Image 1 (tube, one colour):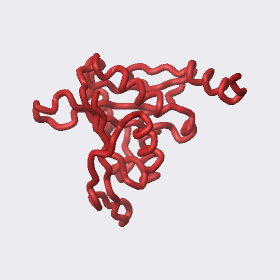
Image 2 (cartoon, rainbow, N blue to C red):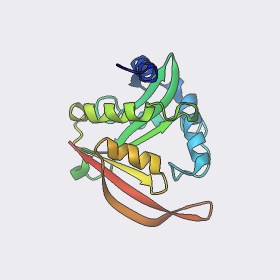
Image 3 (cartoon, helix red, strand yellow):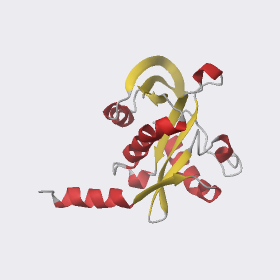
Length: 177
């Protein structure tokens, strides 16, 4: 018999909707990203971004090959995921770099897991045979989540990032279809 807590979680997940990001979503997307920048846990971006500076962000993505998705519940964007070209050389055309960010008010509620699971499920129709994630080694929650969803550690780049005078390692995780 399901507990009340698990029933609430299931109900919340059933209300989640993943869709292609629209220009009207940019303020929420930027708010989420700027909050992540301040934590120094999930992006090497050091300065906050502006709407003017990211106005063309969505144009770098295409729904049929390299999507930019938002997850919303009751009209509120709770997180987002992008699949972008890993490297520009054509031999890498079936590999995508995955990034996922969650609003700080909605963390630990399955938002990132739902978005990543969708990316894995839809990889074949997007022509993606491999996904690569670049995650700071000190971001243990993200590393655990990616591992739980079948990503493996493919590499480590020691000391490649300097976040507020702290040297950080970058872990490369990967997934194959």
